[in-house]
Length: 130
Image 1 (cartoon, rainbow, N blue to C red):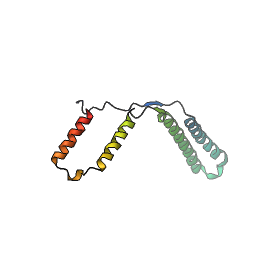
Image 2 (image 1 turned 90 degrees about the vertical axis):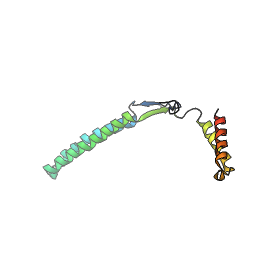
Image 3 (image 1 turned 120 degrees about the vertical axis):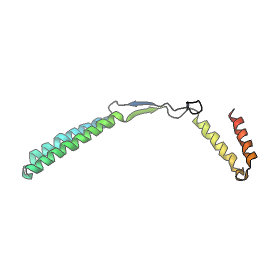
Image 4 (image 1 turned 180 degrees about the horizontal axis):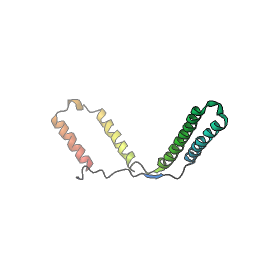
C-alpha cells in the first residue's frame, strides 16, 4: 500500500469496558428474581389453573427472567464505561480552513471557468499545501 492511501491521522480513542455497572447488576438481579419469583408465585397460588397452564407459566417465567439476566450481563460487559480521546487535535483548524474555502468560493464565478482557470486554481491549491 502506498503512502498516499495510508491514513496516518487516525483517531485513537481510549475505551474501557466492563467494570460491572450498577445498572447491569440491577438488571441481572431483576432477571433472576423474575425467573425464580414468578414460577414460585404461580406454583404457590395457581393450583386452579390446571397442570398445562401451570407448566407453561413456570417455563415462560424462567425463560423471560433468564433472558433479562443474560441481556443485562451481556450489555454490562460490552457497553463502554469510558471513552477518551476521539478526534484529532487539529480538527478545529481543519474546520476553520474548510469554512474559509467555502467563503472564498461564494464570490467566484467558477461555473464559467475554462481549462486555464481550473489549472490556475489547482496550482494555487498545490502551492497552499506546500
